[in-house]
Image (cartoon, rainbow, N blue to C red; front, side, top):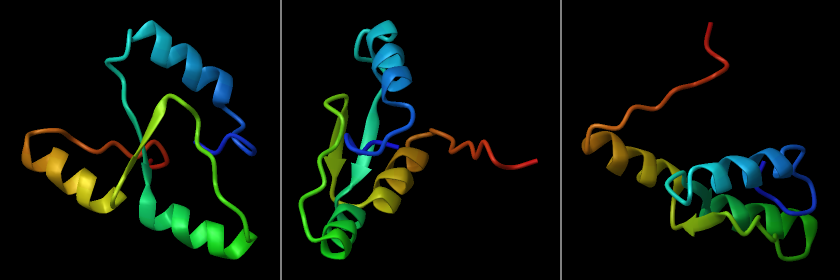
Length: 76
């Protein structure tokens, strides 16, 4: 969702980010990026609204420990 070359929602991400005046944050997992780069044989470029974090799961755990909640939109 955050890759420049393949994101089907890059316009929506840009719009949401601008509407939030920078309060909304998008994080890309460095570990996943490295794995994908090995698979495709070239660097992965992410949208400018996203920041790379060392590990996505670790980031989620840190936020949850501060009271944030993870919402899975696919859950029914």
